[in-house]
Length: 403
Image (cartoon, rainbow, N blue to C red):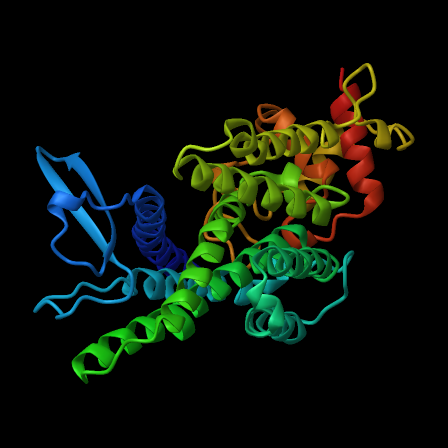
């Protein structure tokens, strides 16, 4: 019953997380797009010298005219819309999911003894430390003299992210490492909103209400963090969906995969931002997209599995031969506890992804997926059923040589 309730809690929190994330990412993408499409107000129509630019759009059967002030209007409107609960709700629901899946079930999803022999409390403590440390170091970099040089700061942040990717992949299971990495980027993003962007906006509003001349500096700092957030977005989205693709987090050098996919996502986002700006060097604007696509192709090529002519993973050819009965025994002991109509493995209310392997024929019906999961060592989850390397190699050998 507890597992069943946890599954429902996970479903509902994940649903909320996706909805809030769509709202936050949509608002973020829209305002970056809006900023990059602002044009000077035509002189005959200029009514307020404080307006820095405007944009006309048509949508939903009507015309919209958006204007942005350089600092603040002479008088604040009666109704002023803010955008922050989307970010807070996304993070809170995401952290809830992290607790429900990767912390409560750390032995299955976060810990891999073959990577690092961590206890459950140690793994959770380290993961929490990574989330906090990532924000503190990033924020310190932004507030340092490096923060005044956009390109230098970008390089420093990229280095920080790369080091973190390497570190978490050497501490946690592949799936857990990817999720902790994505959670740390998400934490940086929402902390930017909470500690920099919204306070800067509140200062502008307070200054106007108190009759003071608004200081443009808080707004500029907020703009810097907003730009960073938009480049973090696609790497975070990749991590959110990566748990469906064991070929990424289960790769031998999964930290390189994580860095490369994050780089590709940031490049593609940079291309979108560049193409929305005023006309310029088209070839130069396309460079980020080219880098992103080339990186994706490189990752795909690097992850191509090595198979022998008969389809057996080449790394497993030296395994001792087994017959069908031995293969069935391995499956019954190491796979069926989770992949059953009524799983006996603690923490599982239903078979993962609905895949039931109570007979060898049911397993063979999903042969490519099974071979990949075994080869990348991503199954059994957290090796909860204690499959040995010899059993893994033997099962792979039989799957490739079965009569």
